[in-house]
Image (cartoon, rainbow, N blue to C red; front, side):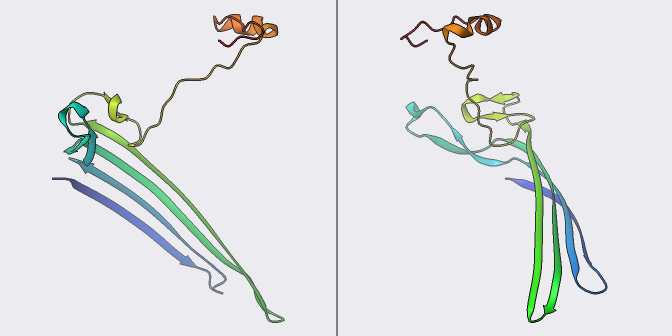
Length: 146
């Protein structure tokens, strides 16, 4: 059974004239026994299974500012809103006790959703032979792919 403990604190403010107002919110949550679909070998007859996969930590801050820059000036008004938010989540532990589940892209200390790929070093041309040598790569021959 998935369990989450959460802490939220917020501040709302308005200037005396009411022309500037805003909010600041901070939150933290800790989830244990997180329920997620876990990929399993298709030889089982299924592609995934709903399982308790581990624990996560999530925290963030949200800031919203509103300003009424021009009020009823010859029938015109101008107001501006600015919103900024930052949220960070990370896996604290996996139920398997391992530090990584590469098949599902779950890594302890990383966000829940991780995308990774090979690092592309480029295509070396013959004139790049000195640079390619730094990376122990041969330069491409004219008219061929490496």
